[in-house]
Length: 281
Image (cartoon, rainbow, N blue to C red):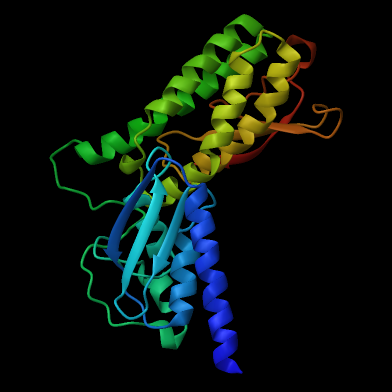
């Protein structure tokens, strides 16, 4: 009876993999060794690396070889392997964080052989009186995104729909120019979650001069920028601010480089309505 159940489960799993692969466009297929021990590892590895209609992972418990099938326009091998590493599983390219590995069930704690660690920060190279090139690249990747956001916020404070549209287009360009492989691991994972929403709301603001429509999308845009800036290192504080009157009395938030309140949802009508609810350093 147990063998019948196992056969059914394997069949269902294979069918789901085939279906998932069929939905992925612009497909690229790679094979990579990923370390693990058992069926529980197989489930965890495949779940961590799989994204609906974007990437599918099929890991063989005997050979330790994973087949990665993914849309090359939306992700890449490194991104998939980093997600798997964060779930606790080493590959030939990335070593899982020690905490993630130690949280695995005892039966899943394989013998570790990989050498290159996935870290939230890249190792620093000593250079006299200057930051490393790697650190500068990582900072610059998102700095233009944040700067464009603050310029957009300032345009909304002035109730200038034309300027807001232009600044949103600049923000879109900044988003498209970010090189994900230059991001630190923690930032990278948040970036992947918020990128599509950031682009969607920026495009809505860019495509109209209607200040009300722009402000509606700025609310959601600000939530995504908040998630991103929380995991990014900033040289100066960022102030997370709240207006209780916005969004039909439900309240809405935004980010600012200054503690003084300048409300982007009402402009001169209620310029100082709101308060700082968090200082992000």
